[in-house]
Image (tube, rainbow, N blue to C red; front, top):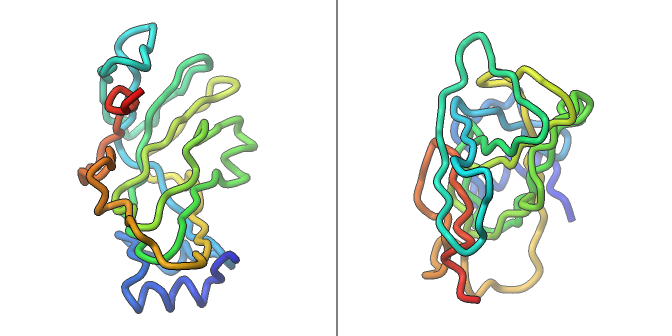
Length: 178
């Protein structure tokens, strides 16, 4: 079940959901709008190797905006830091963003209960699109969880994305045991 606007506010009041900065104007009927942070990144090497630590080049979006190019994977970040201690957060693109030909995640739209951080975005475009720091980029939707949780994400020793950051984070696939 998806939380409504009133229930999101109630869960914020209980401390189960945290959104910083929070602005009630960005609270929708059953979601919260998040915004593009000031940093983007691209991988340095033209071939990304799933078994190695691939370095990224991080850069700041200039005030005049930045033109995203097709056939390039950009890592972005949300302006908002979030915590979810009792619900499963999902990040989806806004329809206005999708209508510009921007995808904000390839596969990583679901967070885990206990996820506490900004959201790294996996941005790709179908044609050149100019983006700006602070523009609405996505929306968080919160789902109820049935049953007790044994391992909150932020308490797992194997969690790879716990370090608080305002910059995009590259894939940590290389840390997996396989």
